[in-house]
Image 1 (spheres, rainbow, N blue to C red):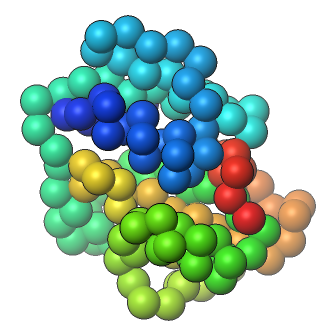
Image 2 (spheres, helix red, strand yellow; image 1 turned 90 degrees about the vertical axis):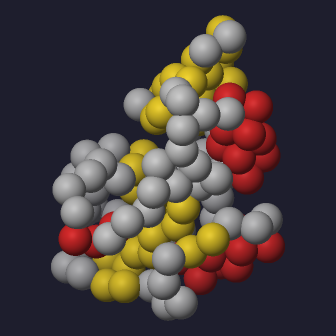
Length: 129
């Protein structure tokens, strides 16, 4: 679930930039679907702050991608802002954090092995390389 102050901008970002589809919509809610996942965005009063992203408690959606370099290049061409200049790495794979128009941080990850399950969402990005 996401909380966003502007559903029109959320629809643009999550559909046009990240490739999700809208499966349902009301005056204060959007339901996105793609790649076997669903995500709901509710209208809220104000955007969040990125803060000290890596050191503060929070939830992060992680989208599995085939090529992290290609995905970063494609998303940057669409105006997406990444929090680091190069991908980081851990035992699961290589990852890069980016921020949506509302200060919500997400990550893309290129796994070391297709057999590795991502914690939490582990949802493949609908139309990202």
